[in-house]
Figure 1 (cartoon, rainbow, N blue to C red):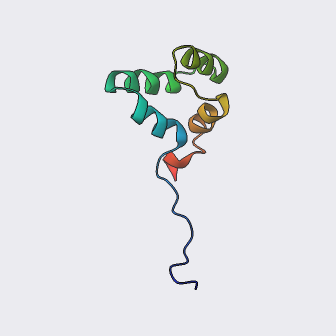
Figure 2 (cartoon, one colour):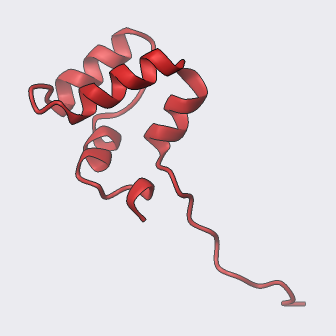
Length: 74
């Protein structure tokens, strides 16, 4: 009955990056990466700008990625 019981595998990329690679082209991926790394963008302002352009994401997801508390650093 319990054959194959194993913990769930953790994903190697976070929700933000998974969404980005499926929805954005290479040019936009580079722009997003630069914006995430740019300290002039607050998480709130970046979230608003992305959502206005049709890339729906939450501030918390962006902040988690910036703080390296996401699946990308595991």
